[in-house]
Image: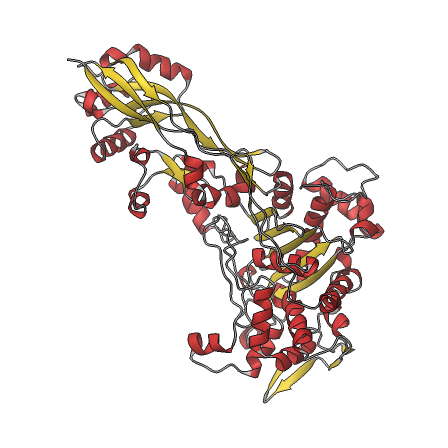
Length: 595
């Protein structure tokens, strides 16, 4: 006797696109075989018969039987997918002896740019019991075995928008389990397409430029907060997770010391080192603890009781004012500023500049970092704040932590003088997402100008001089930083280890750089970290300059934008990495309009 069944029709998942409509995550046809337990009679026997027609190992058959028993008898279970057309034809030809088995055309997720966008886009995977437990009112479509939902990144955080709504199909099924005819259907609603603020070409270039490093780069549009690059290296292939990653590949990812599964841009936190000095300078200026022309003498160290706090330049910088303190990154100057200002004013300024805040992005594990005040230490360490703590705070060490995302926001707020908020979603379903209003920072413009001038001096006179642009239309302003991982121990010194680069890789300092450009009319800000890279001027600044140049010129910066003495080496490096088309010689034009 024939029966009437109702089946859910999974909706097509919405696409994820970059700001210009380039596909970052989409769907493609997937030939597969499904089985309905209610119609199969003896599922194990049918699966054994099917294994003589297509490649279906015993472990796959066992998995299908487990999934069948965990679901209602009338719910189709995927037996095999990504089949060839020949496989589908053979199964269809043997349908009389395969009750409950049907070939169908489904959709599977794919990621055209692979590792380059993995940390932003994330990936999908089959619904797990844990996923269902987390949902208060799970969508019935999630009960379909191996239905895929977002697991990380934008795929996870925008799951309800991307998933859509299921339709249903009424079918007549014979006593032998064969579908006789369709009696009607209600079409579902496809998931909504999402346009990100990411520029895919810039994102891919940033990943290529960081190849071979454990690193992260974030580029933000100073004018509206759009994140145009959010690159964490190394990446991973998100397609590997779509249907279950193999144990060997999974273990390789877990055991890689460069942590490819970690999104360093938003979840990684690091002592910001000397990149934090602009915050301390602004706190000193705003509280009246210092004036722009105030000077401090740096003899290479300063004393605090029986301790000596050293400057990175052992011979000292001599007498320095605020501009020179930034350009030469004088530690002694900032020990003194932090002593005058104290932790509470520094913490308040840090938050005003976007540090110590878990910014609202559709990404998992967005870190808040740590910009402590005296109360924080009392609560978390049960100790009073000390002057030594302030000294460490003044140079971005101690308890201070920031993510590359936060440092990019920090650089963008200093550059533009407004409280821009980072934005990752540009449009949903073709409808633009409103840009948050960015109010002017409650910081005196003249004080911001002092700090910007110091950053200009860093890039064009100071510690980042070798990582500058000479194109007058795109001059940079930046700040180098070194994030100390650990001190060289007495035992290591006794063994002859006196320099950071003599340590094992994972004990070396992190290299940081923040910058914005053009100096006169800021368009983009960048934060760059190279884990265990050493000094920011040598490891992070050259990479950041190239990535920032790509954003400004709409492609690799022309050789004419670089100092003349570096052009030959840069040309050779580009050829070694991957030959790319050189922009027109007249490419000293303003940045392309991404509005």
